[in-house]
Image 1 (spheres, rainbow, N blue to C red):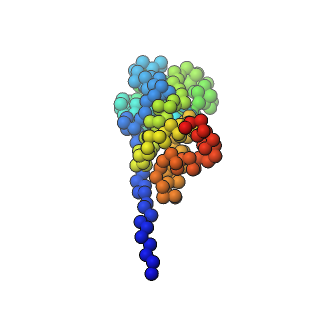
Image 2: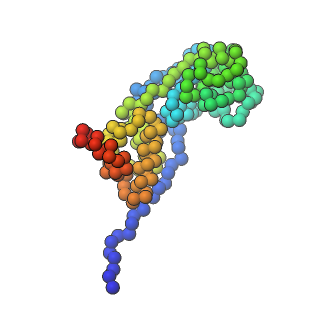
Image 3: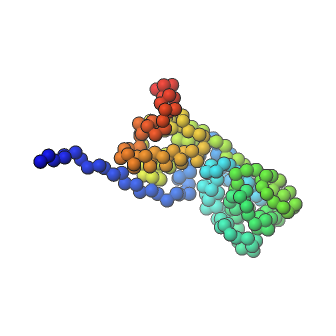
Length: 230
């Protein structure tokens, strides 16, 4: 009778952390420094309001929540339509470009102008493109001060990848980061997608998250680029 002495397959425990909006989890770089600075100077916003815009998963929510915590702002939940439900303190209204009750938005902007109760709006596009039918509301949106999140630079992308891996309790070798950055789209969404793919592949194949694993799952294009990277 033969005995298989090979060690059993080692499962990597997948304890994923709940996404955090803590300041320690937010990476600051050249691409978002202007937005951070404008949020810090919130008391000087023109007409008391600011529009924070950027592509999906660019970090708008994280920045907005950090600002809300700092100034004691009310983060408006989805579904609120009555302006009377807004408390007498700063307000965060997210994803305005995807649709928000016009009276709620109009009241919040007017209140910021008249009473100085700050309002932070987030969206993926310029306020001038947001769909509204009230002429006075259109003029308010056109006059909004805007700050945009630019595509992340290499340093910021590295820190973002590191944060996403940390949320999944993964600590890859440092050589993985430049390898991924040379091959990914310059967006937080792309960073999240890469981390997801690597984590899932590592679980399925019983391998650690590493540059070798990334080379295997990214395919021939990654191999060709390696000729110029190594």
